[in-house]
Picture 1 (cartoon, rainbow, N blue to C red):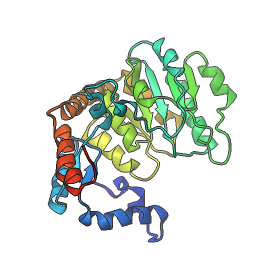
Picture 2 (cartoon, rainbow, N blue to C red; picture 1 turned 45 degrees about the horizontal axis):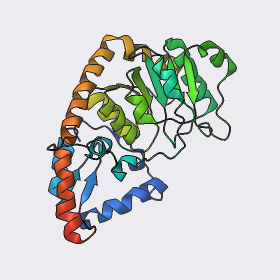
Picture 3 (cartoon, rainbow, N blue to C red; picture 1 turned 180 degrees about the vertical axis):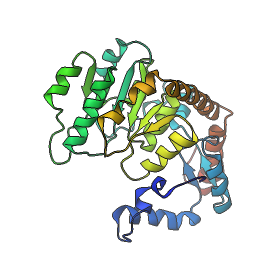
Picture 4 (spheres, rainbow, N blue to C red; picture 1 turned 120 degrees about the vertical axis):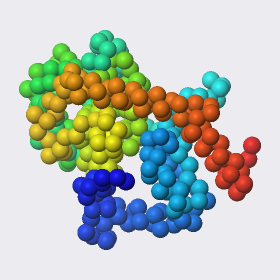
Length: 296
């Protein structure tokens, strides 16, 4: 991992407590990894070639088979049961898609901090005022448990200020939203699934990492891949207002061009003869079938 800083490492690696829950959670699989029949990673070769090259020296069989949804999209049979695979932890609200349909192309900011992030009422309000001050329409996913110890309720002044151009939902079909032509940017916590889905959809990101691997994902998104801008999770509304730069500015235009290049590479990787498709076939034939883990 080139040019990595201490602040870019996952939070569970920066702990000074050997009994830290997250540290213990990742330590066990790291210790047994050399004994594994294979290591499967949700990326594609071009995205992190340097890391994959290093892994191949440490482990005998490493398979990069992402983005998974693009692989599923290449299923030849529309009735294939694989087509119905979903991996949401919460019930989706699809009504928001009708609202997004009414907005111009590349005009809407999509905001979602995932299924695990929690924040203070002050952070919620700063995000809200930043969105309000940006003057851009936004779709904001606010889980009922997003705020620590209480219901996630925005100050009424923010609701009044944004009632004509903001929509709040409890959850949504994220991939459908990100692939909608009206979405111009993604304010995200930089969870890995969200990062990959945004890249795959060709949507640049405003990154606000909180914990776990999110700092590392943010570093790659902003510095290595050139498709995001970072803000601190000790959030200030002025930082959130960078949404304007993301959707209107020269830097945002460059990020949009770059993310479309990555989108094309992801599509090439998951095409029938692309690297991820080949890796998936090799995983099945070299590991799963040879070990008797599956039958055809």
